[in-house]
Image (tube, rainbow, N blue to C red; front, side, top):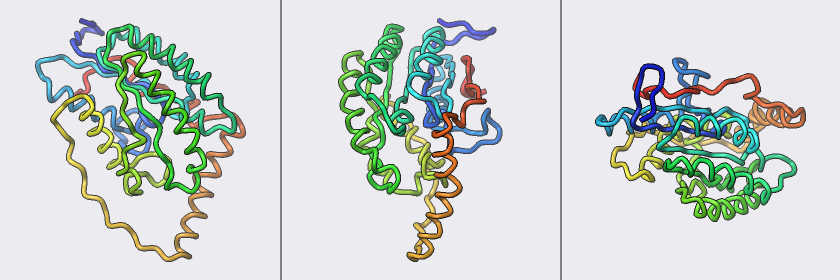
Length: 263
């Protein structure tokens, strides 16, 4: 049993990764970094579903982090927390760069997963999303498919479970995506939480909010929307990458130490 500051936790869930796990797109002004996200929601449901256990939860994910940063900054911290459950999503920010050695990256990922698996924790890893419906991100579809295939083998080698985001076709519905079209919306995060709960074998599900009707847009309105989106979101995103900076450079992990997810 892991003992924190005056608290003992018999079950310990640690979430690692980038903006996907940090919770971008699921706004909550009451929480650190003003986001909630699927991982927080999973932790809460696990604690509610298993009151006989004392659940501790830490979320080490920070937006914009690449694979090497996640491995060097988060893995050892997670191991020190003696997790019983780990989720990790990493590598997509690397795939979005102009150049990436996917084989070398998955070699490093394998080493990191080995450390996590050695704790005895249940480890869940995610494939990358099939962005075939995005005119901007469809260009990385081939890279993501290669990454996913290599990840399947790495996960199998270390006894990690696969949350197969690539096959979640409901995310072709843009209502599950935020206004920036890069991160899931609140309904998207709730859906992902339910997908993870399903992978864990839990029967509980979070109620999905009613989705708004799909807007009917004329061609000129669509072109205008796309131009505004490119200026407000794509331009700054590309600029940060050209300058080698990240939106998460000055941020800290939201929940860096174990805490009750119901606190």
